Amino acid sequence: MANVMGVDIGGTKIRLGIIDAEGNILYDEKIPTQFPLYPYLEENVLRILAEFPDAEAIGIGTHGFVDPKEGRIIFSTEALRGWTGTKVKAQLEAASGKRVEVENDANCAALAEAKFGAAKGLERVVCLTLGTGLGGGIIWDGKLLSGGPNGGAAELGHLTLYPRGADCACGRKGCYEQYVSGTGIQRRIHEAGLEMTPLEMFQSAATDEQSNQLLEAFTYDLGIVISSLQAAFDMEMLVIGGGVSESAEYWWPQLIRQLEPLLLNPLDIQTAKFGNDAGILGAALLVLKGK
Ligand SMILES: [Zn+2]
Image 1: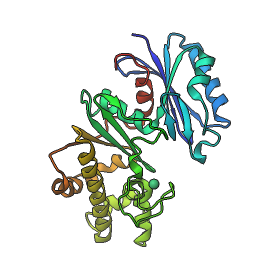
Image 2: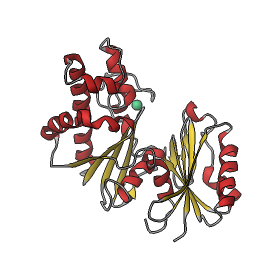
Image 3: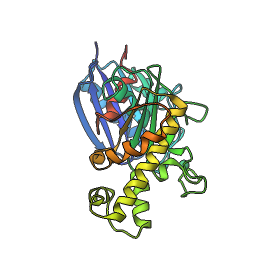
Image 4: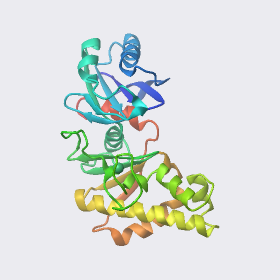
């Protein structure tokens, strides 16, 4: 089966790879994000396609709200300035002569985990990406649950956890993302009067009561998030990825202990298999046939 190109677009860097049908990354390149973004993207995609002319299609995962049918960016923050409204699919298909599909990056990560990773072979999976923010991806009967009139389906980070809680970038208060994310954890550390990173807080929790309370607050909130998602989706597995998941060894037992009484039914919970590779693998999966 032919290879495809996967592209993962973030606020600081863009990763472009050539991926085969088994999910092997045959070529891998990272470039800094530059603006205006679209012409820069097209130039680099065409440059790599010239080296790999047999790549039969291009999958793109990007930060922001995406209309996956039209392959258009509905909304992106200033991290990708000028990106809002860009008809990526139409423009890049015209420029490359190849099929192009575009999706939100957290959705791509979920796709990678469900097809090649921790949830391989499962049909109903929810993936939480705990990075700077909180991304969500839902695999429903083997396919991504995405799109919507505003491109906002599966934006799990903006479900409400505390109705009068912390201000969120979306203009509302108390979203999951303000508690269950690297930024949310850092805010709570700061509010507790401490000067440390989330990792340092997790590491010191075994010996320091204040750190332990912060850790327990985080795992309790994450438990509430997971139990609410189970009530909505009754998934076979919940996968936790993103930067915060890399320190899971420090908080996993507390999460499991707090989560169990909150669940409606037993639930398999796993950390993601793919770290930084999830983005380009998931992007490639958008266009890999038979996946
Ligand atoms: Zn929000």
